[in-house]
Image 1 (cartoon, helix red, strand yellow):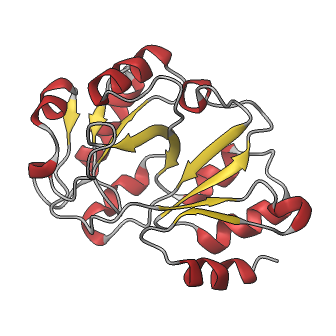
Image 2 (cartoon, rainbow, N blue to C red):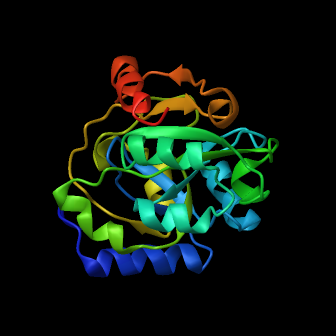
Length: 210
């Protein structure tokens, strides 16, 4: 494992997820765990490793923006403008899940989709070649601090997953969570958690989408 990922690492991650496995990859914020967002068995395994409540949703992450926009064909024009303003970036966006996608990730709230598209730094840029989505959560025990390095990921998680990718030390601050479910109808948004992107930065970026 190295701090700079390459095309082989991206292939291994894609194959791991496609094969029903669970992986620990780096992101633009903290280390995460991921699996196939449509595979309930893989999702249950990831939840068991984390000790995460079974009803709590996870985000769905694409590694670049265009595949996300192409896959989510039901997005409204205003939502697409908002996504282009904020993504890629250290944010998780809550959207109306009109097509009832990714039930394994959405859990008890199938009407809402949490979307992530990380702004990959140079050492992680190879992951941008992954076209499909993954179901993603932080690589920690539920409720415990986020991991900015693999040394901070609990050993039980590292031993329990099928693949671990080392991206070196990460910024360590989790994503900012923004609720955009009222954006298309009312041009309103709600900050649910301020993280790596400040509220002022969110306001400035979304002003270009209104």
